[in-house]
Image (cartoon, rainbow, N blue to C red):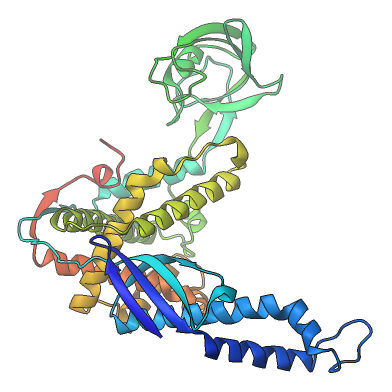
Length: 435
């Protein structure tokens, strides 16, 4: 085998490989002879089929297989001999093997991974969120848990914020119906997060049995294109009004949350422990995001186009799969590769930087770190030991905890070298509930 390598650009290479034809022809002949001893054809007993017929029927297929295997092996050998790190898949061109005389030649064009020089992280500034989980956060959580377990009691009075109203409604734009409950009654909680405030405001003060008609004008920036810049006429009939009844915070409430003896103090301690876990996860996530951003800013790379194309394809497939899970007809959604270009570049860039950082500084996850990660995953299940056994029953299931533990090693390594300051935050700010 003879191989020559040309540099087309910083990352692109063209390799020409010549394979002697004689060994390939000998292997083809051996395969056909072996096939002739077992192949079945109409009118012939097994092993009695003329070699010429075997060659006619199976020759092209065997020839392609032998050549493909030879190209694959010789390409790998040539890449290793030339110490090349191939990124993506090569584009291989060759003349038909039948036209070859003494040797068959093919040309492989491909990209290589860039040389990665990690940037200086001493100037990177990272903020570590700092807060204490106080009784106020515990009380807020208990209030949320009470509302999740609330009941509603019918009342004769007019509707107020926080009430549940049973309504039938229809909506029109320019005289055309755009939404309707089709005469069926649905329940709404007035003032609930995520609802259209102006819609609920119009129902405050309405009593059961009443019908109210009102308009809402939506801004041009409304995310729903059907509503953007439009005025919607609503006609709403209120069939019933019910006020919320929250459960008392007592032994029965604690038992309902899994505290077997109904000890309210223990329930509060359990809630605090859960909140501390959430705070720890969120702080780690925010630190990781800042570390990754610092690595991207400090290191400049030329990215292989082939890896970007592969990542774009992966992102598009993930979006399609998510849309299908949501019941969307994907054939009606126009996904263009350009939509994913920037995200793909960022992902490839970060992946290359992290790989170099981990390998160069031996930051791979240790077995005890992986086990700690699995133990953390298992805490939220009723039988954590079964979850741990499930993870370790198949090595592939450990890919996620291994990856996360490795990322934590990267974060710790960067934090030792960057400028880190603590920033006091509230619980809601940390969890993203306030701007």
